[in-house]
Each structure stands twice: as C-alpha cells, then as structure tokens.
Amino acid sequence: MSSSPADAAMARLVQGTKLIANGGSDKLFQQTFGVIPGEKLLKQHVCYISKISGPVIGTLYITTKRLAFCSDYPLCHYPFSLQHQCIYYKVVVQLDQLRAVSPSANIFNSKEKYIEIVTVDGYEFFFMGFVSYDKALKTLNEALHQYGNRSSSDKFN
Image 1 (cartoon, helix red, strand yellow):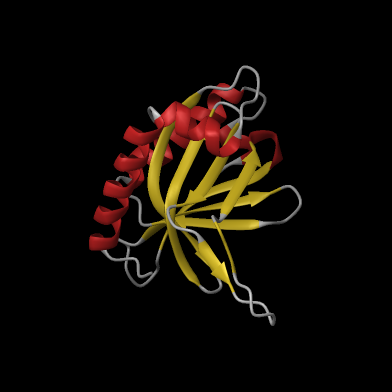
Image 2 (cartoon, one colour):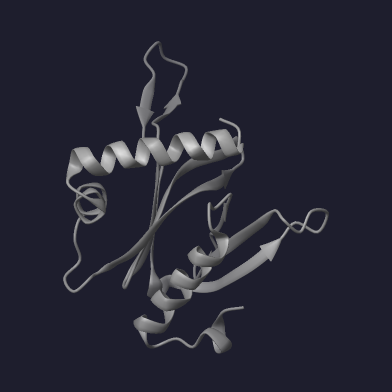
C-alpha cells in the first residue's frame, strides 16, 4: 500500500466504519489492545508505520500509559508451506519503556515529517503521514507529561 493522500482518506473511512461498528474509539481500542487499570485513551491518529517492506497504514492510539498501533488491514505472510497467514500488524509500547521521542522531517523535503520512537531495549519505530502531524505530536507530549515521571526536556527531543 502506498502512502498517498488518497490512501490516507480511505483509511479515515475505514477507521470511521470500524468506530461505528464497534461503538466508538474507546471500545475499539479496548477490543484491540485490552485494558490497563487507570488507562485513558487521549487520542487516535491515522498514520503509517515504516517497515522494511514499506509503509503500513493504520491507527496510532495514544493513552496515558502506552502507545499502540494497529494496521487497518491484515498483513499476509506466505511461508514455505501452502498456507498463508494474515494478521493485523500491532505495536505496543508502554510509556515507561520509551527512551526517546524525536519529531523529525525529511532533509530533502521538510513537508515530509515523521516521529521516531526509540524504546529502552533499542527498538525504533517511525510514524509518518499523519493527517495532522502537529496534533499527533501535541497528544504525544500530553501523554508523556501526564505520565509524570519523565520530563520531555530531559529525555525527549
């Protein structure tokens, strides 16, 4: 799937359909990722996550305790057997497992902005193609601020 504006618009329609069918964003998040006591969903943002095989469109959920991404469509894997497996691509990172959150832009095209997430165990995730990059960054900073034991000036760029 390419990272075009048409794909982003289609993803918004898919997300809207899922929200209506599942009873709202809170319910959809809970069904997809479960519930942590005291956790509150702050906002969800349609975006892409970068993978070696290319960008994957989905939704980034930002809560008071974690970041969670789920692809809009299942990704299919074709192992050497005749069967193939299709599963949704999910990433979940607890806020206390974040080492760095870095807003960045493509050096050749400053309009192409992304957010790099680095975990304490060295995993890197790149989120891009936000409908509203600034709102996503603001929500992420709010989550980090509400989490409380981290200062964005100390640990996050």
